[in-house]
Image (tube, rainbow, N blue to C red; front, side, top):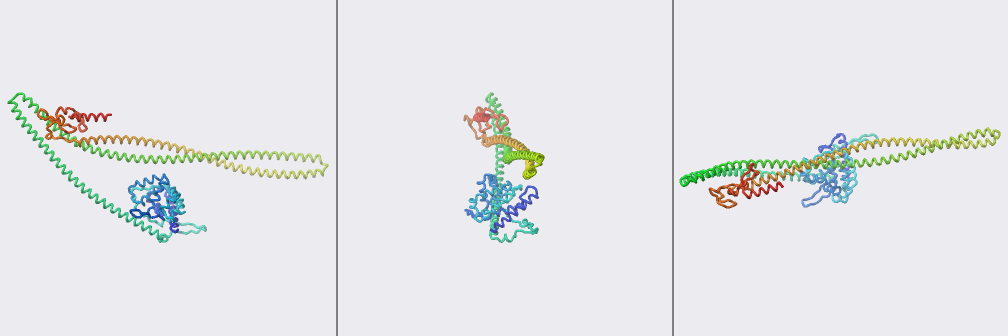
Length: 601
């Protein structure tokens, strides 16, 4: 009971100070605002009061985030808060998730509504709280009523970058000092006694548990940092090993290039010597061998040209590879940026939809109030008509009474003239007439009083009509506001349509970039998959399997890299790595033609 009373007083003071300071500040509150921090600390203590300890495989768990998770099941509007809290990677403990949940609920101005839903289902709360807990007693409903006043405050709390898991809340009692005035006019200063709160056993135990939890969290963080350090050191060692292996591979490739050059030079020298010997023998033997000599000379020139072309092609392939890697990196960056813009645009769309829903609810409420006021005006008009008819009837009665009075006076004068001699009878009649006059005067007075009361009622109804007219003017102003809201709604719908069009365009750009990526990957596969066969390794044509000779020369296919004869590689096609049409074998020619036809379709 003492703990609940102390927590209630602290909650009242923190809410009051927060509202007063926020209204005097006159702007949106940040997470660094001291009264706001104190409010969250007090609210956390209220939610922790009377929590049951749950035993798990890891150990004992005591967190107020468990009952807050029930709100998602009871109120579907809170699902956005739960998903956003779960998606935050910085939060690792249940305490941090609970604090983030409270921050988001305050920013939505629905903290009181969500806690009220929890209090309405106390049979579910009994799983988490004890019977004497603050949330299970009447004090919980009082706290929810206090939290309704926080809907006046606008808060902008940043969750990223803040360590909500290890944040320790300390209550600053200097904020709760307050000066009040008694009914007799005496002023006195009162505050919560710090010793009365700190001497409580359960409160100190909760603080000790909280500190032990923070120490355990810090030790876990230190272990994680040590593991990450060891992993980074291993990655550094692996990276240095990779650099050494790559340098060795580079040296091996250089040596292989030098060997290939030496072999090609030797083969050229050997071919030159062979041709010279053959020329001498052919000159001595036959004249027809001159033609063979010219053919061999031409083939030598072609081989030199082919060698130059191969060197150029190697340089082109290296440049193409570097360009392809750069293009791949740029495309990956573009895709990441476009995905981020897509996520931001979707969030803006959700915010615009929520604003549209709020504007629609406001318009419906305004229309309902308009209908009620129109009905009240019609009822007042009926009452005024009834009062006017009753006034007319009373005026007619007054006219009849005045006419009767005049007729009585005339009769009295006639009776005096006619019956002057009959004094006895006249006196009797006069007494009777006096009595009638008195009664008539009484009736006149009563009618005058009724007339005055009717005039007062008329004035009251006139005042009511003036009030109704002012309300009608206010209703016209509300109608104008409704029109403005409808115009804003139309503008927002236009913005939504433009954003949807932008999303569609972004989707088209993404699909085009993906197609380009697939084309580039195919070209890379084509470049990496095929190896260039050496001249010494091939002695027969791969397709017709005929042996190569001086008359049947060797020719490389620029697509697969294998060696063919002239008849099996007479086709030419433009490849992605070659700007001009080059020599291709028959099988590659048919495959490339089929691929081109499928791409065009």
